[in-house]
Length: 320
Ligand SMILES: Nc1ncnc2c1ncn2[C@@H]1O[C@H](COP(=O)(O)OP(=O)(O)OP(=O)(O)O)[C@@H](O)[C@H]1O
Image 1 (cartoon, rainbow, N blue to C red):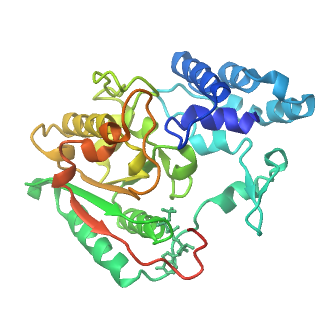
Image 2 (image 1 turned 90 degrees about the vertical axis):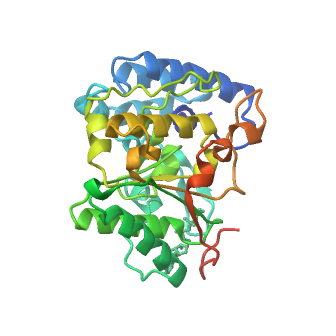
């Protein structure tokens, strides 16, 4: 297993399919390291991550990976400060997609290829169906906080290739251009890379890396932490790949936002939150529970969300 896949396993807690036993063991060990480290991405934890399966990693690989850690070590900060963006961790050894679509050897990735994985700032015009959703969400976002009486929860359901990422980046860009802070996050770091300054849901909401089958898991964010302050200030929060979000994680996000906003009676504390994804894509994988039981649609407030769909695939989209 490459170092890239070890790190990816640590941040990708609900990967589709059934990971092999090696991957499960590696993931659990990595998660322990990350959770127990004083600094989530300090050098020791990372070095330990990268040597978990040292028998499978050649000496040459190890040398290259170790040298790649120096910028992280130089700039490492405490987890409750401004910790390193996950894309820098993933950038260590991310796969390169060649023009033919084939995955190239991830050990030889030039730095520029990480940028190539991200969607560039949206310059194209939105289609009619994208525009309708954009207008509805922006109208909700622009509502002054003191006028918020009802919840502002949306769901944008779109099969692959229908332009959800483009729409979300347009929303992010517009909000920020108007001086309104906006957050985009996804359950996996790889999905978060597609957004302008995207981050993982675990970072945004303090979702524990595992253990949410107990029904008692709570966010590890404190009400007066910088992360909570960032949520308070955000005018828009986009959560992508929501088909990977479990009912319990949705509950956690809702509960956290109600607390942070001091509005316990309003869904998401009245915050404008958009859940995006394709329900026909992957479902959360939690051992011992059926997909239906863990899917976000089992969350009690799912029916209350204002739902939109994108239906038209774009010409040139190679996604199935
Ligand atoms: N308004 C638009 N004008 C031109 N091209 C567009 C537009 N919207 C989307 N596209 C193109 O369609 C393709 C798919 O878009 P996008 O990646 O946003 O889909 P998606 O719904 O996010 O897919 P997935 O769920 O798999 O991430 C991309 O190549 C994108 O550039």
